[in-house]
Amino acid sequence: MSKELEAARALVKMLEEREQSNKVKLESLKAGETFCIGENDYIVLEHREGKTKVISRNFIAEDRKFADDTADCKTSGLRKYIEVETQPTIENEVGAENLVEHTVSLTTVDGQNDYGELTCKVRPITFDEARKYNNLIVNNNLNDWWWTCTAWTSPNRECNRSIAVVLPSGFVNYCSCSNSYGVRPVFILKSDIFVSKGEL
Image 1 (spheres, helix red, strand yellow):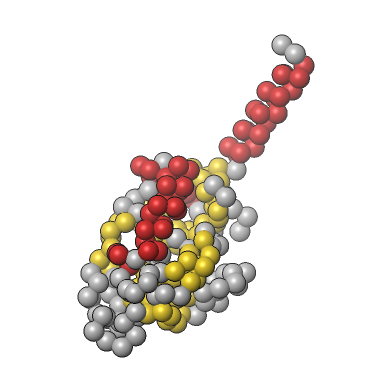
Image 2: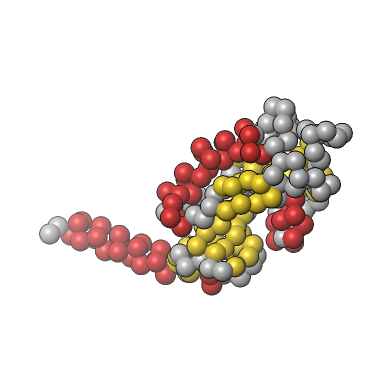
């Protein structure tokens, strides 16, 4: 065996050991701590019954329209974008079996139930979650608003094409579905997987 090959193998082994030493069980991270999936960092929001809800620390996409003319996340272009572009990348990194399908309510900000529920694996945050986890989702390094999946009101009321959006500071407002803002996906993982711990 050549010295060059021996050196290369030793380097590979060292890099693998270094990477493994930075791996932790997801369930060991506290709410607010970060970990890495591929090129993106994610924030732990909560652990519950062997599952962990997370949100991206930064945008995984910018200047994305919610939809042309609907506040219904189920039929929106943003949902299609997340399912086609974002979800497969996450599944490739953590394994599709570790990404948990779940259902969330699309109750509007003013309490209307016209839009029902959304069943998915990856999605925008809901308005209720943006309130619940507000201190954890603040990121003043972001340069734009970002989408929730919650309509401001029902289809038969004023502002019926408006979606709740979040400012980097955590402030919540509403904007037209046809505007373009940032995307921070939320999803649920099995808590017993190993992840690379983030810097914060």
